[in-house]
Structures are given as structure tokens and as C-alpha cells.
Image (tube, rainbow, N blue to C red; front, side, top):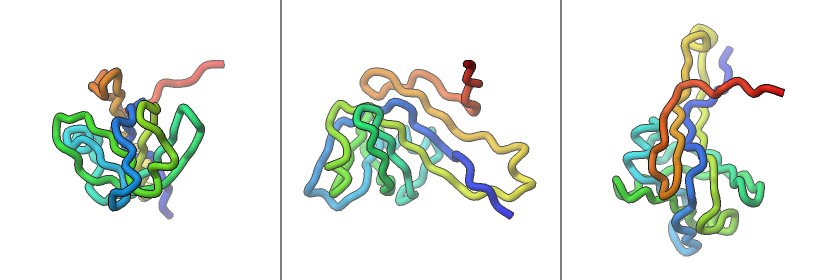
Length: 126
């Protein structure tokens, strides 16, 4: 049996471009892709914090160091430049992998600069 688990997350990225007439997908700064372990053409989920939209697309490599987050093609209707988004990828893990699985979490700040990284989401208290 396999369980779908969070593999990687770019937390609070800012959309820098929304390009309707582009060949689809989401272009992400190559350095951010590598740090999060998200591969080119990998399916990603995008959650727009500003408007609540949630949509699926795939990642393409953007210029390294550019801090680019470009929502392209039809998905450009789902987010606007300046919106804060959470970009996640998920993977299937076998039962024996679950005990040691740790997602790659990349937290971003202004200008999509890296604030910090982690492998665990803090416990939420009531």
C-alpha cells in the first residue's frame, strides 16, 4: 500500500508574472526548484492565499537566481502578479518509507528570497 504525502513546498511565494499567452505551466526560479527538490515537468498544486483558488499544473525551470514565479497559460486566470501562493508537490510513499519521510520545505520572504528551510511543519496549537 502507498500513501500520498507532501514531498516539497515553496511557502508564500509571490507571483512575479502571469502570462496568458504562454505554453502553460508555472515557471519557477531554478534555484528554488533545486532547493525544494521539485523536478521539471513535475505536477504541482498551487494554492493562492489571496483569492482561495487552488489549481494543478506542472513546473518548468525559470532563470536561476531570478526569483521568478510565473503562472502561465490558462492558469494565469487563477492568480495575479503580487499574489502570495503556496506551491506543493506530492509523491506516493511505501509503508516502510513513511517513518523516515521528511518533506523539503522552503519558506520565502519579500522578493521570493529564501527565509529558511525545514523538513517539518510546526505543530499548530489551539
